[in-house]
Amino acid sequence: MERSIMNSELKEAFRQVSDADSDYPKALREIPDRPPVLFVKGRWPLSETGLTMGIVGSRRASPYGLEAVGRLTTDLVRAGCRDGEWVGGRH
Image 1 (cartoon, one colour):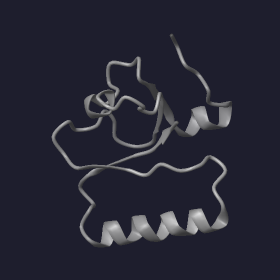
Image 2 (cartoon, rainbow, N blue to C red):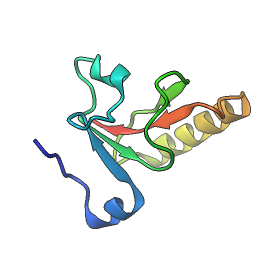
Image 3 (cartoon, rainbow, N blue to C red):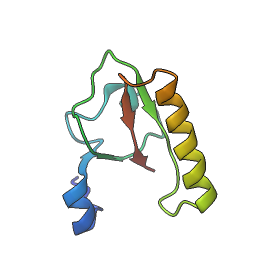
């Protein structure tokens, strides 16, 4: 089944990868309650051998949530998590 949930603005900025696609990450396929759709910006497909980091949140994030994830990702990059993959999804 084709899943298409992006509006036209998001389609221009992100690639949509569903769990039905062959390039959906194998590690995520093993999770029983996995996100059915990932929104991708940047390098794709993911390396199956490298470090992968995922941050899951709300599409309607609060100002505090946006600030917190900004601090968290900045700290992770400063700590050396530059060469890994960053993944966001919709659940």
